[in-house]
Image 1 (cartoon, helix red, strand yellow):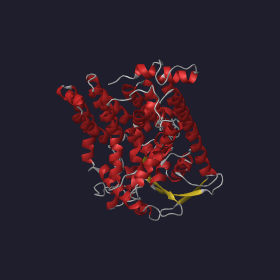
Image 2 (image 1 turned 90 degrees about the vertical axis):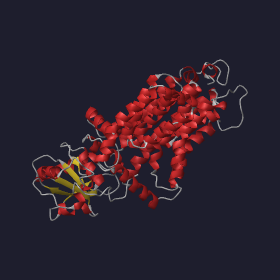
Image 3 (image 1 turned 30 degrees about the vertical axis):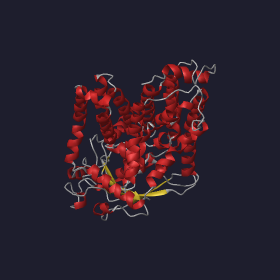
Image 4 (image 1 turned 180 degrees about the vertical axis):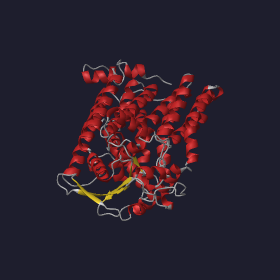
Length: 529
């Protein structure tokens, strides 16, 4: 591969040249330091500002916290690495509020680092920095990161797999294949769709002569053995639960097909990329003019790799969305390398001035968009009365739930159920650390058993004025309903929640919808994307 480090990173002539400006100096001479500052900025602003205004966690986060305390390998939706991380963050900090934002930003910052490592191998350190500086302008690395879920958790694994495979495929040594096996295996625990990138990587190994030659050594096969060893427990558990996550995904796809326009997914992805193209235009990288001292940016082999691994999964998913239902968040980890692709194709125009503009744009997007997010979230809840998940007073709901429970039962609150979203909030901050009985279905909450229900009882919750979940009817019967008002906004009226205590000693109803052997495979309510 043509080495560009000496040309563009050394400050001797070339497009960058020397500059006495401190800002340019750190960008040109200390790109790793600039990357560290970028990550610090990302972590501080996108953790602190959302944590100040979001009093309730997003749905996926609340669910993840509740599932994390069960320490199961799989739920009916996904593998549970994100839930384990959420529970660990709570055990370390005692908070259910700000750690999830920090987790998201640590994942995104780790993604920045792995993208930089891959790009520096291909483009040199300075152009690698430029590639990462494009990422904060993409929606997925900003606003979308306010929710730590499986899609966000995948991001660094996708970036790390791309870097490790590139190093392994060019013959850098056995350690790269072994590390690739570990990271790819753990990535499956973040979300099953990591397998898509692994599949693309496998096809690239077969296509690329240099990578294919490595198959004559034992190291790729040992890396594969490590990968298989790591994912085997997941496969075994999938079989045990009758592949419920795939049934859930299939139902969600059907919901998307029925409720979204055919081009919806592609339109969302294009909108999420818009900021990057604006930045490219501002920095002059879309101009056709070429500087006379510009150098070739990337060899063909590396460009093929970038296009295949960096754009292949995203393009395939867009094509698939025309025929099957694809949730808009599925593309979250698929755009890690778009900045590298952009610099590889347009980087001949990149000089010191353009690099400085990229750095300014990155800072503006991080500070500006995070500030706008915080202001809009606060105003939406408190001034405009728009009830969103982040507006729900999570701690107060848990306190009220425990108070209602202990008015009738002296023992601890062990199980919460009812409306899926409100039940998670009722149990989230509760001192008794209750378990969630998802959809009142044993298959969706295998940590709940009829014996446990007899011993501990259960608290049901739903929003007053709406019907109680139909699966709760046999539990509610003629039991008294306790209504509680909750303030949540400076302008809007309080919300009212209904609680029903199902005391210990109650015999679980003989209902097929909640029996452990029920063949039902997915929730009846519309899936949340």
